[in-house]
Length: 314
Ligand code: NCD
Image (tube, rainbow, N blue to C red; front, side):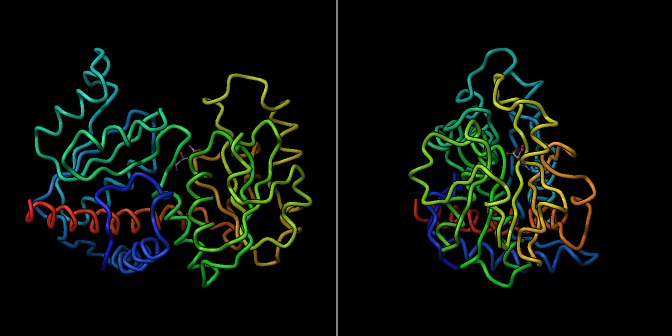
């Protein structure tokens, strides 16, 4: 298994082979996670620190469970209660933790680029758990694994990514990943929620759900990221749901076997109809959460193996 990376900071710099390596290894963990005894010891003796400077439910829980199942000592830093509150900078905090010799540092931060910066200052492997509007690589990888399992392949699919693209690191990482694997990507949403650099993405853009959803294999809905908006992006939530919310009627435009995805947390009745989100015949939202643990186990195993080699040769 070759995975020539020290950190996982984004999808942008991964190759299609890197992506396949992660997904293939993750498959073995899907099986392990379904057994009653879920332990492997590939991270035994290693220390994993989770630093979440932004709220998170599923991503933090998923990284914690993944580390524990692989035998690492996992510590969750309560960033709200830490010295960050007292004005310590991100880098000072990272250097302090670095002095305790962690092996894996999992970081979520509200500013794009903050995790890359931190990775330059520490001598462990850094995993980006979401930085601002930039990237959320493990989310795109777990989405890819979910799609590959549901569709039997991860290429030549028509994938619609819908809603608040502009503020979404999930969308950016998915655009990189699905593009590298040669899928056709459509972005659907109001012009106010499209990123300015859209021309560089090699995607088709639609303002109308009716046109955009036609014959797609995968419909990926995104949360309206209200915390990243300073007003004026959408008329009202009711109007937004009417035009861009996914419900059974709009889904009929997609292929009959199209799957529905959402990274969570969902705003039911805003970007997605609650009944559709819970429909196990169409929605793979719970599978996405399940795949998240397996993908994070795989990535941490690959990075830990590289770290061991780097330290031997140092
Ligand atoms: C996403 C995130 O934090 O970027 N959630 C997640 O990690 N599951 C998406 C979101 O917050 O809308």
